[in-house]
Amino acid sequence: MSSLQKLEYSYKTSSSSGKSTDEFKEPPSTLTFSSSGSSKGGAKASEDEVIIVNVKWDDFEESFELHNNSK
Image (cartoon, rainbow, N blue to C red; front, side):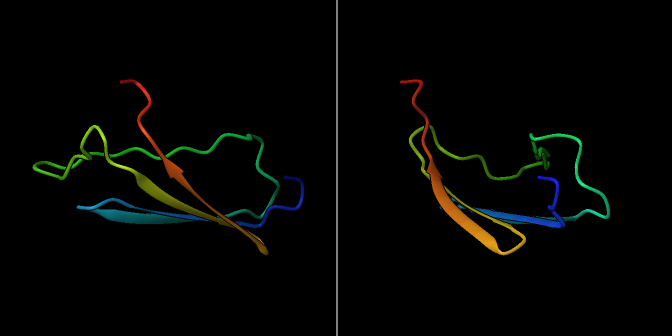
């Protein structure tokens, strides 16, 4: 994390998608990054929906799926 300069992420569901980019002039002081928001009348992921996430940081990239395991 001491060399992190840019963090980008995107997500996609069957009904929506989004992305965000953060740039750092100094190394971030936290290892946890989160995003939240709401919209009036916005789409909501269904209980069994898989959310595809792509994260890029500097020259690295990783993709993964989020699943609801609370069933």
